[in-house]
Length: 252
Image (cartoon, rainbow, N blue to C red; front, side, top):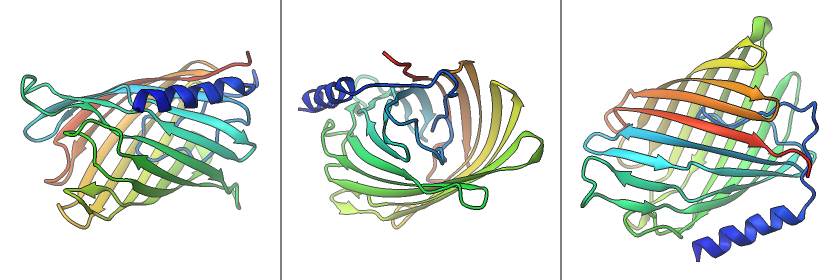
């Protein structure tokens, strides 16, 4: 069922005219927790993917392909598909939890710029399509409000407010999120960031991270990234490191 849904959605994307202006530079959600505050160009398809290795305090979890499909429906509206990730506990590969997670559908509406502030709202729902050890087993909604503002000297400040309602052990575990990010453009294709991200859950304690990363545009429509984090709270992963690749598809 999960594969049929993904194929059908990819087919729908493929029937549309995919356009990426040669002068447009890729702008990704990866690798920060804070989402981008702008949408992909109308008619363009952007693919973002990666690999993450986490020390989850008792498990070494491999997570891939971290794939997002972002399609520009309108000038300020984006359709989003989160492809199911595959999770594997490498510390206990024989008996540890493994399998594909849930996939999610969402929409992103760009509201800014407003007084120099770029602003968007993202609404999504994840569907219980994953393997039993990994899936939440519920239809889990979420809403995110990412923002950013350019400063002088190549600096950008950004952040995100979000609310999630994941299913945990058959019940909602309402979660609020706050992020704050400072980014520095080191050269035209290269930037680096430092970020605080905190998820504050109704049950189970907060998950707070200090996150750093860098991204390099190897071409106008292609980007590679590297990022890592340290957990600041007992419920957070002890640490993680990840790499990624993103591509804004050109006209075809």
